[in-house]
Image (cartoon, rainbow, N blue to C red; front, top):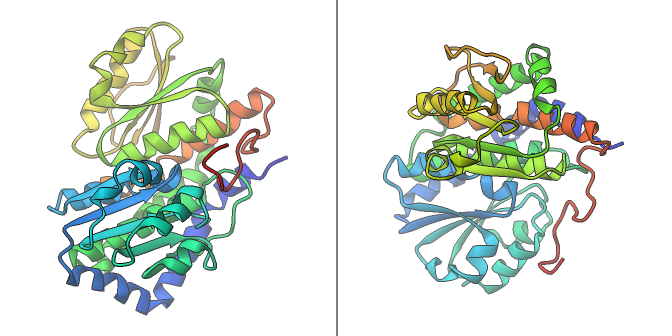
Length: 350
């Protein structure tokens, strides 16, 4: 059997250790803050898989404060958009292993003048050695699919975003700590929503996952968990875009997960969940405890702690992690065990 479930349950204590290490490494926080001393023309966050999606919150956080940035997969950056990397570009390269094929190749091809911030869990990796500033993840290695390294990467990306702005990293640390408290609670209170997840998992063959804003990272990561762990087709959608055509897919048997944390898009996301149910679909709505929507047989509502919207991705993903585990077991699959790929994608051709 795999250890995917154990990895999920370990996430709060692992992130607490990350906090301890960054608190000890005062010079690391200081080096992060030095990033604000140069006026970067652009900031690029790049990674593959969950190492790509973990930067979405930080990217939005910077854009809402006027800092031009892009979150892009390393494969696209390597072959189609490498020209955007200039001497005044801050490149934040994320890879838990530091050895992903695209990561290593990009490091070989880019100019030595480009400042690279490396986020990795392997201090002896190629990425670590070639980074001008190394930001370690400080969590235990995973044998299964990415869980704690994904959440740790979200934390580090948010710290970096605050540092780039020249803001007070202690304020961001407080925000992240509150998100981590929510993470601890959602795991410890699993029994409160376990029955809803079990009901939703029944006859679950295809799932659409949607939201807006900061939660789009959870949408992308959530579909990845369902694909990797449960081996089922999962589609990701911007909730606004879902109205423009994909809504036609909704009928009896259609299943969707909708993230609706406190924030600007909350009511729009909730209305979409209700609309899908009205049209015959079934929804697992992951929202906050203040949401007043009424659940029914086809609208399962998981109410989590409230937090600032920017840190909701640190804990709202947990019910989807548990859902992927349950669907896999229902299908007779060992959760998190790879069939065709591997933990480290070291080749671009397989």
